[in-house]
Structure formats: structure tokens, C-alpha cells
Image (cartoon, rainbow, N blue to C red; front, side):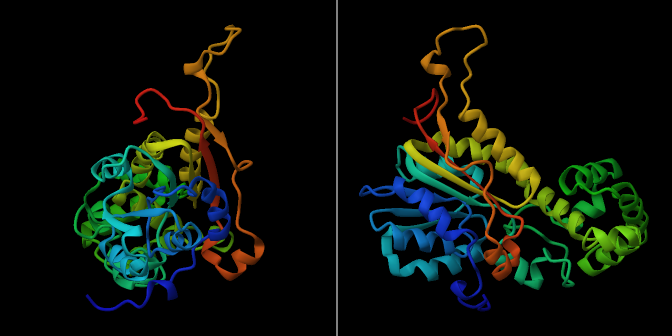
Length: 326
């Protein structure tokens, strides 16, 4: 594999210090475990390994290149770090396979990593011409080109509307279907050119790059991001020990909506109306540690523009629930 450069030089972890501040109290005991469900290039994991000397970090990522780079970065911590090639919705199986009953903290930094955005050959960035791949795990799954070339128009329309919140989805899909009959899509530049023509000029002046929403929608579909995230957030709560904490960084409203729904539901009593005394099994099992969603400071957004859309939610497990491994 061609060298991509040291991970520490290429990635700035979003809200690093704030996340450490919120999760570290759960990682003070010897043998405590943090699962970083989106390891990326290891920036957050490194911060925890430095700040929490009693803790071990399990880093999950579906991208084998990210695992290799993070492994190099974190090698100095020896067996306090372990990388696992998996998708984050497999967190329950990962924890079980490692022989753990539960863990003290879980972290997710959702969205596309700097590694994927910065490498032209991955096809995530609309600013660079590249093969239309967009798979986070390049060893399996359908590519963005296959989605564009084979999906029925109705399915393409659904993806652009639901995952990209694209106002001009119908116009875009009509153009895609017409163009793919002439020649299949293979590279990003041709798709960007089509989107520039399909999205009205007035919208491009006020709504940002015309490819932004379509590329987001394709990436989410290719990687089943929302389905995987729905499963992952619920699975993560299940593996949390009482007193354990979960932190989630989301980057668009669809991810944050799923996160908010899961955490708020856990922090809300399910006692039916009219029952005067709350039954223990209906009591809340989470406590929210952030008021709504926290955002990066203006200075961080200025230093790291990719952090601008980040939203952080954190909660603490307050009691066991039926079906959990405790």
C-alpha cells in the first residue's frame, strides 16, 4: 500500500477535549474499556489513551486503511489499544467476542473521515474527479456507480429525497436516467457536471455546491449508514455498564435525529399515564449529560471547517434494562 502519511498529521479530532471531559469520569477504574466505534485515524482514541491511563480502547472501523494508519499511530500504547475490522452496528458481537461483559464508554464520530475525503481515489469528494466508489470498506458492497446505473428511478428519487434532502431530486433523477442510457456512470466529474446543469443556478448561489446533497445521499445508501446507525446506537446502549457513558458526534440532521430519539427515549420514563407510582422497569435508564446538542466553538470551526456541522450528544447509563448483558 502506498504511504498516505502519518495519521496524526492528517486528522484533527472534532471536540476532542470536550468529549474526553465528558467520558473520562467513566474510565477511571483499572480495566475500564472505551469502544471507539468509528476509529478513523485514531485522534480521539489517542486522546483517551493519554488522558485515561487505566483504560483500554477498542477501535472499530470498516476501513482497513484507517485501521492500519491508526494502528501505527497508537502502537506506543501497546496492548491498551486493539483495532477491530467491523461495522459499528456489530458492536455487541465485538464486545462479546472479546470476552467482555460490558464496557464503560462508547464513542461515535459519524460521517466521512478526513482519510476518505482527502484521497481522490475513494470517490467521496465532489471537488476531485475519481471513480464513483464511496464504499467505506472497499472490499465489499455496492458502489455509488452501481447505484446510479442500476437502481430504478423511484428508488433513486427516494434516496435523494430521504438521505440528501435534495429539493431538485426529480430533475436530477430524470437527468441521471437519461444519461446512463447513453453511457454508464463511472467517475465523479461526469456526475458533478450533470448536477451543475440540473440544479437551478439561483439555488447554487445560496445553497452551496450543487453536488453536496446528492453525494451525501449516495454515500449513505452505499454504506447503509442510517440503518447501521439505528442498530449501532441501540446496541451501544445495551453494552454500556451502569455508570457507563456514550458520546455521539453527528454531522447531519438525519443522524442526529436517530441519536436524539434513542437517547431521549432512554432518559424518559415509560410509565403509562394514570399509574400513580412508577414501576422500576419503566424508569429511565439514561441520563442526558448535554443540554440538547453541543456545537464546536467558533474558534474550532475556524481552525477545522469540517467541524462546523458537528453536533454532540452524551448520556450516562443509570440502570440495567431487560435484555442487556448486565
